[in-house]
Length: 574
Image (cartoon, rainbow, N blue to C red; front, top):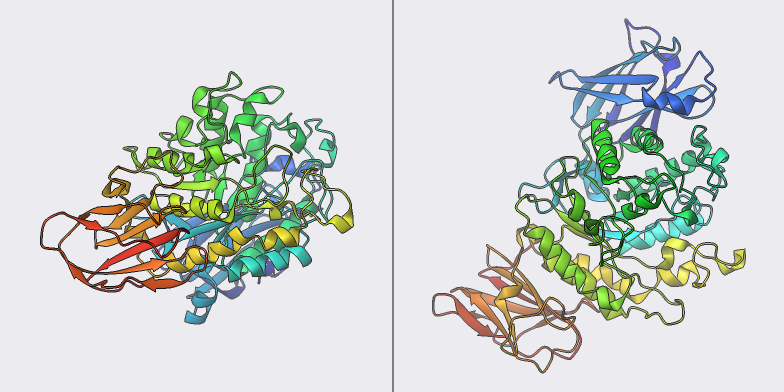
């Protein structure tokens, strides 16, 4: 739970109060200003309150900015990145906020805490190869995300639907969730509108409403307590249906700074905006230089060094509305070599004819000389009802997206369904997608989402962080797999001679060969992505005669999709 200390106890600088907390647990320090500020949110430009935390044993320090939380209340939110004693001291032009001091003793999380909540392993960092993420303690992080763009809304709630969704996703092994901190500028949550003066997209962002974010605080703490990493942007800027076509670059910088002060102590991944191409259509259009300026600004106050990216739109073809490289469904097109961007996100499109782009775009990113992780952050959502003329993704196509992403080198995959809308027919017509009237609890039980549990279960049994894409090792009916094919297999292998092949639906009677199967003794198994069952292959122990050889793969058990697993010499486990 969130720990809070008030500065009423911190006026005696000679004997500052001491409090014990657990490393990485989130800790609030609450201050009360002496002065009244007509527009306190504007104080975030040069924060009225800053607190320096100094680690006594190492002399390292952390300077955190405070955030306004209504009335004369200001807070600083802290998570201790190192065990030991931390002293803190505030600085402010306001006498009520200035020169308050205290001491915090950060203890190591217990084995029980680490087993129950992976956030005690620490904030995410990029791993040693640059291909995947690890926690601060080096523990590899398997990124399997769900999508909950509408988390900060009355539809999601603070209990009810939110808690039902949370417990379901934890049970299925999801490790992350995509959110936006502001759902829509003109839609209130239980605390009101985020900016009451901007109810009709007037472009007025001076008067932030802290009550709107106090509800998000409770949701963020619930996510942290259950071990989930939170990934996402402040909002969608540039879209009329999100009420944000009048946002200036300075507005975005101030809001980002505020939100990072408020939520930076949590285990988060930061996206500058959602669907960045929309910013080129703001009433006073942004430019690529503006987006780079936002990225540089964010990194300057990204005190905890959270991974930073930008969420792209799904368009895969050039358009005159914005630069051609913005129409590749990837942050890499325009920003890969920018210093503020440390990993890439993809959005590959909500339609069948764009599914192949998952493998293509991940492969493009993987081959870049400046190595950065790539996350498939948005693909084809699992829906029950769509507009006339649109297709509905089958459970096999939902599974295909995850397996194709991971085996082509993605550091993460994010599943999506219309659960993110939290539509409840008992509360009237849907506000967001009027054509989709699927109750949220039906979307929650969608079969493709259920089968993400089998993705996590499988990868937990192998050292997945050692896998490298090896689609070129496969021959199907004597030919190399084509990236545009939704039927051809995908393959990845580890230097430790672990080989994983995903064989989509429709391959039972095709001839499958694996090349470069080096001399060793292997065991082979079939793993079912649709049921999680395992089937041994008769005569699985075999010895290659030497050199780089070709192995004729036995026929899969049936015409459904299967994962072939070859292990050399031993069984792999975490």
